[in-house]
Image (cartoon, rainbow, N blue to C red):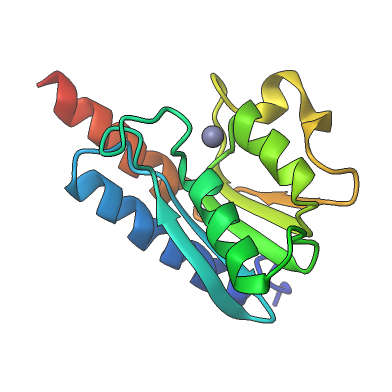
Length: 151
Ligand SMILES: [Zn+2]
């Protein structure tokens, strides 16, 4: 039998990020969710709130960074993993640089607004990146949201 390439804890925490994305969908926000994990514990959860807060910077990542830094009592997240359902945009990748994030795990890629399309070097050079965890589910929740908007 092949060794599982996917870490089961990555799957577990991405499921938690998906729960956050569902919370966003339930209030008519673009369904993107995040959890930040430190020492195997979730220290921050957030979902997109740009409509609710009338703030285009209220991406799930931005909020979760603030929550995690507050929890840690420091501005560096170098011992943390951030799980996000959709590839971060350039703004969030820039913020993750300043936070010196240890590890980034994302589900679906974002070929339009994802940071890696134009500037993969936006992240901190030490940040380890893993993508494609529960990719189909993470992608479907966003597609379903926009599909429902059109009908
Ligand atoms: Zn963003």
